[in-house]
Image 1 (cartoon, rainbow, N blue to C red):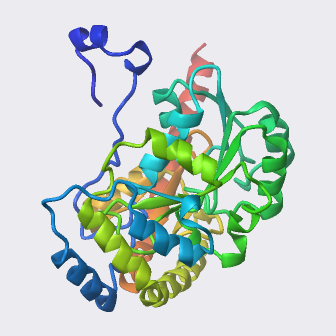
Image 2: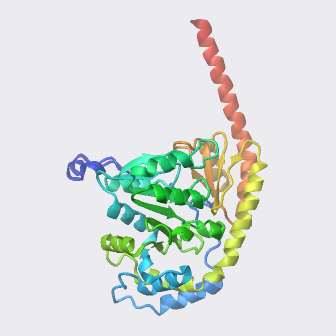
Image 3: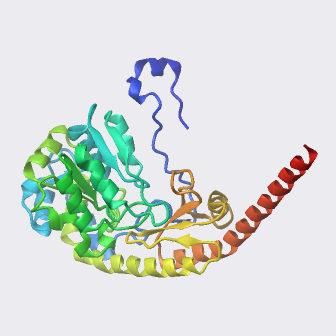
Length: 384
């Protein structure tokens, strides 16, 4: 955990003095199912086209600052105009620019946790207030009526569909209600949208709600997390505002070339997405059979599971089996929860085999610790 020196604390903006850098807590392992990456990688046929595009791309000139060739391809794919699309250095840059352009002091973001932590982080960077409307603690689904009531005076709302880390899709009826109730802007983050049913995409509502933005990324389904490319579809005047605050040349020539080739070859990725969706169902079913595990349904390329001693389970997976998953036990509302990315069949089998042995052992250990604590408490009461 980084700590600022007294000298830097005196120099940095006051509202930034307590911020911590993003830490994915990554450790090199044999099986990495911690970051919701596409563990299958880019299909060979698409990779050949990407490599050809990269080889033909000169690097001595600055990139097209608006990525217009890529914008045109994305617009044609989604049935909109170039003016409705902006490309960014991953979804993260676009999320930050959303808060930078439309947030700020005396403005409020309505957030629906547990969800992606960067929303609140970017709000803090831009001095935007945050109103949390917590999900149901059992189902982890949004409380629809409370959410709609809360957005009535909001400047910004971010909904995630499918939500990270809970995996649920935001119902289009709810998205429409939020857009109607909010006087500001509503972003639906569909980073994992390709793994859900197409009919669940909020893009269907764009023509009726000019305060709606839909965020996409090529990091997940397109296996380009390392290339950093995302895009937003929204009304042209909203796109203009996002374009005005972006960092110049934020999407480099190699990323633009790779992304354009991947989008043109998007049909080549369909079999991989189908495999991930199929493996997600299998992983969910196998997890439900592990004694001591509760798992929530998911439409993303990950599942969320609760078990006793989750942090120790994660450590043992890493240290004893060289398997890495994400620990969410520290997050409010997600006690004893691990998020597991859907991997290849072999990777999924490895994590299920390991959990089937480790989880019962940790549950027994936790139960024994509870008995010892109860006995010690009873003895103290008797001594008193």
